[in-house]
Amino acid sequence: MKICEKVKFMRQLKGWTQEQMAEKLGISVNGYSNIERGETDLQISRIEEIAKTLQVDLLELLSFGEKNFYYLSGTNNGGFGQYNLANDPYCKFQLEKSQLIIAQKETEIEYLKHQITDLRAMIDLLKK
Image 1 (tube, rainbow, N blue to C red):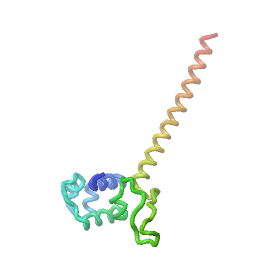
Image 2 (image 1 turned 30 degrees about the vertical axis):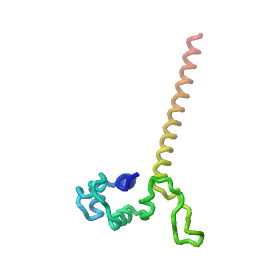
Image 3 (image 1 turned 180 degrees about the horizontal axis):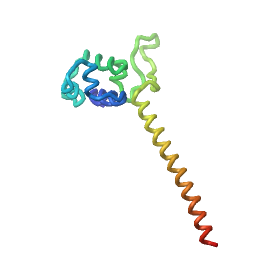
Image 4 (image 1 turned 180 degrees about the vertical axis):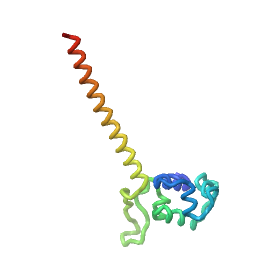
């Protein structure tokens, strides 16, 4: 996933418009939309500012949507730390989406059970 796609996705997770994000960054809406379209070559200072605005660590923004489970850190265990998927906004989004789909399926199952009960009752009436 490209950085511009990650920024757009995380902005949408926050429920912010491009206008709101541009205002928070202190840039024009057109300038911000260029970032989301990948038409702006972002410097690390701008990426850091975007991460801060989105209230995520720079590492989270850069690794968002990737299948990286370990990252380099200043620990004493050889420089590796475990990546906590519970704090990954993409994972949270996918979990919420899955929970909504499951809830909808459960509603459909209950509806179909009622339909089956009604059809059985009609069949019983017709047999008499």
